[in-house]
Image 1 (cartoon, rainbow, N blue to C red):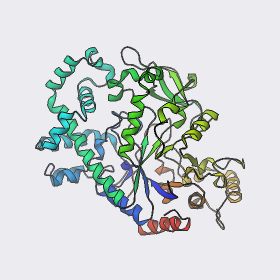
Image 2 (image 1 turned 180 degrees about the vertical axis):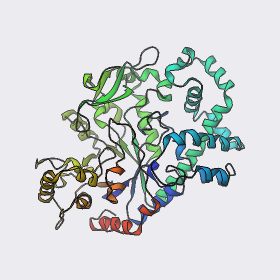
Image 3 (image 1 turned 45 degrees about the horizontal axis):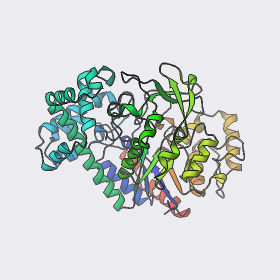
Length: 486
C-alpha cells in the first residue's frame, strides 16, 4: 500500500430510498464523494446474507451477498418491478427496520423473479452450480427453519435425499440462485466503477462462519461438531476492553487437525475467493489465527480456553493486500505472526490515551506498516465517547490529547473538538493507510455508533444524502493533500 486514506462506510448505512443502503445509486454517489475527496479506499463490513440478529459477522453463507443490498431500481429498469411496487418500499429516513425488511423485501424479490425470463447467462450459472450450496441451504431453511432441524439424511448430505428435495422445491431453489446472480452482477459493476475512479474496496473477512450456515452444512469436517452437526465448542473471546464477561459468539470453531490433512485447503480457498472479490481484505479477529478462545457449548465465555491455531500455514501463500485486525488480547504469539506475515495491523486512537507514553496506539508511536483509525465499527464515535466523560475525566482526557498531539497547533477545548483533533492526528501519523468512520467525519454522537459488542439492536445506522456535502468533501480533501495521502 502507498500512503493513502479512506472511509469506513457499511453498505447498509448508505442513504438508500428503500430502508437500507444498496449497491444502487447511493453506492455510486458515495464512490463519487470519495473520489472528489481524494480518498482512495472504501472500507465496507461483510456483505453476506445475515442470520438472526442481523450481524454482518454472522452470515447464511460466507460467499453470499445480502439480498437487502439488491438495487431495486436496477430490477425496475429490467422490467422486473413496477414504479408502484417501489413506492410501497420507500423508507428514506430513520434507522434500519430489519423486521419490516424481512417481511417485505423477499416478497418483492420473488415478484421480480416471477417476471424474469431465464437467460443463457443465468442458465449457465445454474448448470455450473455456482450458488448451489447457498440456494439449497436457503431453500431447506424455508422448509425446516434451521440446520439443527434438517432431516438426518439431509444433514448427512445424502445425494438421493438432496436431489429429491431439490426437484420438489426447484422454483424456490432457482429463486435463491437468481438473487445471487443479480447481486453479483450489481456488485461487480459497482466495483468496476469504483476502481475506474481510483477507489479500492476493502472487504472484511470474519474469522468464523455461522453455526447455522451453508458453510457448516457443506463442510462439516472442517469444524468441531457433534454427530448431529451441533457445535462441540464455540468461538468467543475472554474478558477484554469491550466486555467484562467476555464475548460468546456461538460460531463453531475449526477442527485444525482435520484441516491439516488437506493442507488447510478450505481456509486458503476462502481467502483466495475474498481476494478476488475485494481490492484489500481485512481479516477480522486476526489473533484467532495464532490462538483461539474455545468455549464448551452451553458454557459462558469465561469458561473457555486458549487452543493453538495454524495461521502460519494458512497465510503462507498470501503476501499482499491483507490487513490484520490485531485488537483485543494480544500476546507475543500474535505479534510474531503479524511480523512473519508482514501484514499491517490496526492502530485505534480511542485506545491510545491511558497515560502510558509507550502505548502503541498513540499517534507518535504509530508505525508505518499499519492502518490507523480513530475508532472502528465496534467503538463509540469520538464525540459519543467524549460526551460520556464527566467534567473531571474530560479535563484529564484533554490534557492527554494535548501532550500527545503530533499536529502543530491542534487543541481541544470542547467535547465537539475531540473528533476533528483525533482525525487530524490520524492523518498526520506515519501509517500507510488511515481509515475514518463516516460518523466521525460528521462529528456525530453515539446515536451513530454502529455496534456495541455483546448487545442486540445494532447495525441499524443510516446516513442521509445531504451528509455527502461539498463542505465535508473539501474537509477530507484538505486533510488528504496536507498529509500527502493522495
